[in-house]
Image (cartoon, rainbow, N blue to C red; front, side):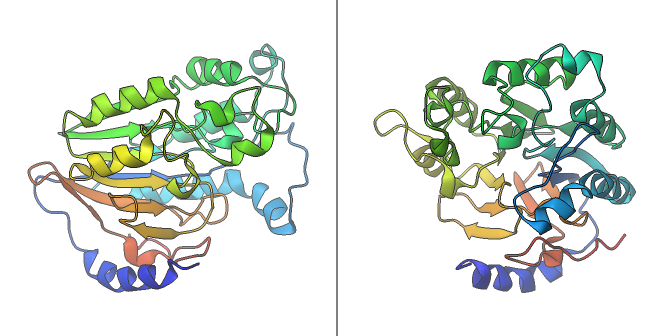
Length: 304
């Protein structure tokens, strides 16, 4: 991709970041695209590589968890940028309470992290292709009931604000919109208003959203939308982190704040990010950036 060269330059600088944590900082991690499956899963996927990796996804998350749990100083918060599990085996709401499904398995796995895990929504957490026919409302209900997770929310921790945004609530994902439109994300006016109110408090903020900003509808109500909002508050947004592409991409400051697309644990258990946050300075440092193999699925192992 065109961003590989920029990523390579950042890789060199990132090699200097593997230093002990500074006093007064705290550590957090980001994972994404875990794509957990269950015994009801029926393949194949769209390519041999995708089919192979979906059957490794569960084991990969356990490996990621083992590494993140062993990091010192300890990771205090973990954020997940969506595609927590992989599609739905049934359109029957009661099915998910009569059977142990991928939703339960994924939730049990993240309970094994020493730090709290804050889950975001991905396209596979909704019924993107309307097969088997799970409504957006049913997905939200299952997330809230089984995962104790709302469609979008904020986490305030030690002076920082983490926003879990949901790009599946706007018109591009409305039930009557053609399925092909779902390749673009949109938030909807209600969520945009909520996000702006959060950002207007000017706390140092990290944003997590599943689709890369390249795939987000720039504006949704006249000139009002995510892209201009990010530029407006770029001074207090430390980073925007997305998933979905399953590869590492650095958009630098194309959209105002720094924007990184993370690779997926589904493909590589080493594909996660670790940050040190400095509440006094209101800044974050991506301490393991040197592990990143830009424009690929992969990262070098984290050195414990």
